[in-house]
Length: 367
Image 1 (cartoon, rainbow, N blue to C red):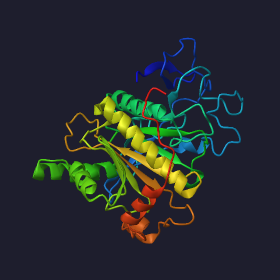
Image 2 (image 1 turned 60 degrees about the vertical axis):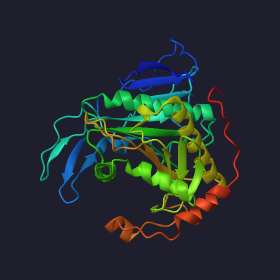
Image 3 (image 1 turned 90 degrees about the vertical axis):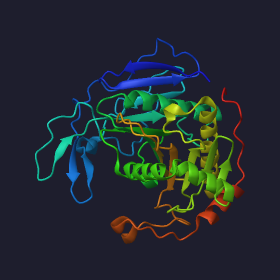
């Protein structure tokens, strides 16, 4: 599938990228507020005991919260100015109006711990024009286009000097604090490698040095051979509840080849990854007979200028812990000590998901 892209600039200076199956009409103009009040100036402070950066972005207190009208909708409302222009395109990406990270941040305050500007950027990814839909309900061509979009944003943002890690993710549901109902995700382009990704990379690097093979690639091979925790399997992609899952219904999705990032996926692998993603999300929704709230995080290689042969692109899907019923609440041990107690086994949950019947995703990526 050929993806067409058009880059625009909003009236307040934020960047907008439109993606479509057909060329984007040159008459389309970027829309948005005329004055954002000047560029935000977030900063970072070093946590000496945890050994990690904490971001401070006080301007986010003024962001949209549970609006009566969705600011992403294409109807003009002076109180909630639209972010999406009218016209024919399929996916839109624009800089967040209230970002946690911003390339123009400067002069961090002096305090008891080291500080630095919170460089990088934060973007919103609008999955579809349909404000009532969801990521899992999208047709295969739309999911495949999103994989292309994540690859394009990883490549472009990763070329910036102030970006060391490109992190696409989606928070879905009011249970995890989502304030806009339009199907969308975000991309944080961090000025550092975030702690969880860094921890995974250390383990993968040590395994590669010791065995000459990728850690996740080897684990996926063993999972496939055993089969008990596999949710979806095809030649180029796999979805599973891993043997070490901490949450009930924690699902990982990965290309079977050890591909470091979205950028290196070939066309066949992108389609397979998109199909696996759609199958898993549809199964989760069907299992609960309601929109399943989750956090979905994509882990990939850093863009810090160093080679990362150890990295293996994958998605990690975590259920919203406040969802009632069969999900565990996080409490003192998990939040305070970082030690998880699982009330169910990965094998049980994988079996549940395998048994869920869903409408098959079409094989064509052309729509």
